Image (cartoon, rainbow, N blue to C red; front, side, top):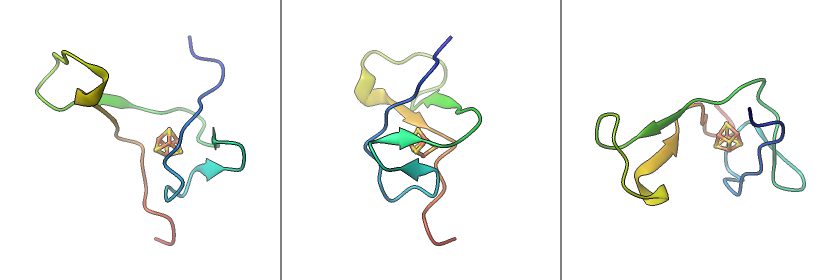
Length: 52
Ligand code: SF4
């Protein structure tokens, strides 16, 4: 299990100083169904735009 999540998406409401994620858990999904062929094809679905 991932203990710490590092993230560069600093316009997410869960983002914290030091490229940390403050969410209790995150959900990562593949763009195309369940099969991703590279990291470019995955996204954090827990993302919430900051200020919303
Ligand atoms: S919820 Fe996802 S996008 Fe937002 S800071 Fe955490 S890992 Fe990054």
